[in-house]
Image 1 (tube, rainbow, N blue to C red):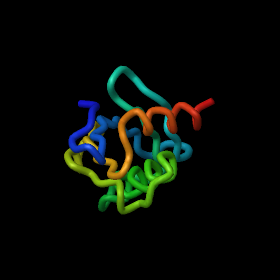
Image 2 (image 1 turned 90 degrees about the horizontal axis):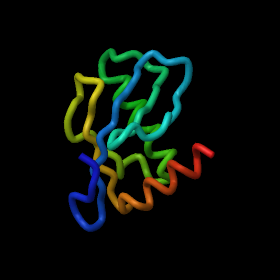
Image 3 (image 1 turned 90 degrees about the vertical axis):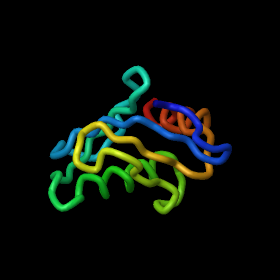
Image 4 (image 1 turned 120 degrees about the vertical axis):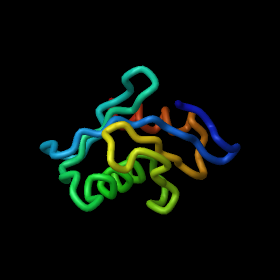
Length: 97
């Protein structure tokens, strides 16, 4: 599910690969954003690394990125406050080039 949940936020489907060599946003795979994080999926470390990485990639405060669903799964639903989906897509594309 990609799309705005409210006028000032966006919901993103994210697929996370924990224990990767580095933290990076891989790019879009259809409607899902693929992300790699170095942290292991232990005690929520991979989730925290994911949220911090997305905040940096989207250039928003860490508090603007929240995990909505999927805390124990690779497929997650993340809300980003304060940006439209189009803005987020543009920021990811700019970072990948």
